[in-house]
Each structure stands twice: as C-alpha cells, then as structure tokens.
Length: 223
Image (cartoon, rainbow, N blue to C red):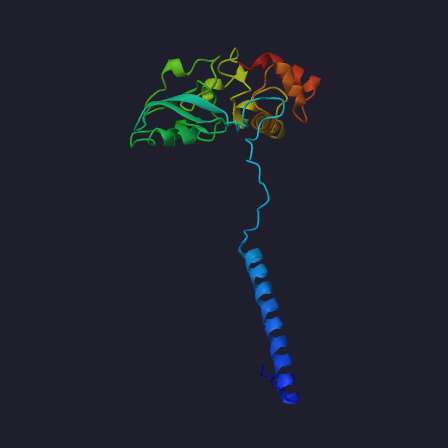
C-alpha cells in the first residue's frame, strides 16, 4: 500500500478548499430558498363587490329628483307657435325663444317678457296694430304674455281679481295698501317658495300681516 505524505502547505490548501466547497454548497441552498419565496405570488386582500346605493328605508336605488317643469301654449306672432315644456322658473321671453322667437310683425311692447310662467298658461304675442283677442283678456284668468297690462287695471274693470301666483310687480301695486316694496316681496316669496295655495298664505310674506291682507283680500285670487 502506497502512503502519501502531505506537506504542511498541501494540508492547508486542502482544508481551505474543503471550507470553500462547504460555503459554496450553503450559498446554493440559500439562493434556491429565496428564489422559491420570490416566485410565489403575494395574495391581494379581498375586495367585496360594491353594492348599489339605496335610499334609506327603501328597496329601490337612489333616484335623483327631476327639476319641476311646466307646459305653456305660445300663440300669435312667433315663428313656431305651439305647446312647449319649460322649467318651472322660466319667464315669458324664454317661452317665446322656445317658439322660435317673435317674427317681424310682432308687437313686443304689449308683452311682459319678464313675467313668470304658470302651468297651462297661454302666451299670446300680438301683431303690430292688432288688438289682443278677448279670449286672452279674461279677467279671472291669469295674465298671459300677450295681455295688455291695462286689462288688469282695476279702475277700468273693478270686478277683476289679480292672480297673485302670476301677477307682475306692476300689477300687484294696483292692490290696496301694496306699494313697490310689498309687491316685490310677494313676487320674491312666490319665486322662492312656490305658488300660494290660499289667500291666507300671503301673511307669510315679510311685511304683509293680517291688517294689510284685509285691505286687498277681495281683490285677489290664487287660481
């Protein structure tokens, strides 16, 4: 049997080589473990499906309220006479615009363009030199755009009642005890809170009490 004699240097090299091989083996094992961990996908937190928002106390989805609308009949000297739907806060001039605007024969001096609209209202635009038909001058009807303001002049028609739900500031000033400030207060309150449901509701208007209302109660209507 051949006996190999190791020198001191060879023994040191052999030990160093063995240590290196052990360290290399551990290095490979560590990389494999890290690779396995990195390859594994991370789980995302569970996100429940969004539920449709419902109105409190109701089983139906929340529904946005539509703005109130009204329907008016535009007649006379306009380009496209007819029935039109507009916002509840619309004015006479907007209804005329909806009907294609006034034509060249129209006499807009007889029209109150700033008057608030009312549902079912007839807006008549007369021609130049035309007398507004009596059907649009009915005293108890709400004043239309085509009615001359004189048709609601109580000095000419003492029995006529003014509709406080459609009357203009000028028309309201014909009432006993109502000046410009009170007339403007009535119109402003009507625009902010809606139509008056009864004559007594006028006492809710700032500046109008029971005594003031008693002065013109018989001169007004809320029809």
